[in-house]
Structures are given as C-alpha cells and as structure tokens.
Image 1 (spheres, rainbow, N blue to C red):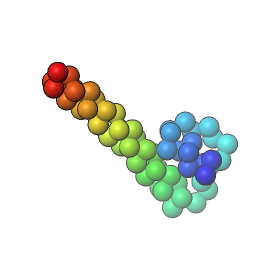
Image 2: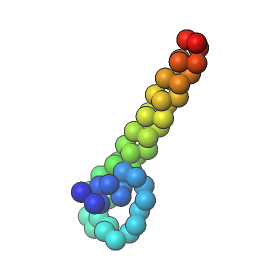
Image 3: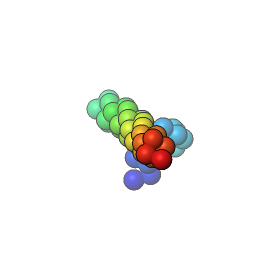
Image 4: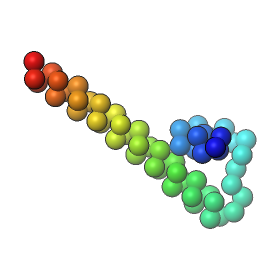
Amino acid sequence: MYFSLVTLASLGYGVITPAVPLTRALACMEVIAGQFYLAITVAGLVALYLKEGRDR
C-alpha cells in the first residue's frame, strides 16, 4: 500500500524498489496512471469552474 501510494504520487522515496523487471514495468505504468488521474481530475475541476463562470 505504501509503495503504491508513493508511486502514484510520483514521490519516489526510494525506500522500497521493485527488483524484478516485470514489477518495475508495472510500477512505471502505475506512475503514468497516477499522472493521468491527476491531469483528468484537474481538467474536470477547471471545466466545472469555467462552466459556472459562463452560467452567471
């Protein structure tokens, strides 16, 4: 759980590192998924903010 949270947030503390190439690839995909999640969330919030500004 700790590794997943640190990986999704792209903090990369380096306390735990995957040793097997497959797990390294999975960790890289998790970093990418975390960045997409953040980008989509921010884009959704900006869209809501802009829509509310137009409705006024």
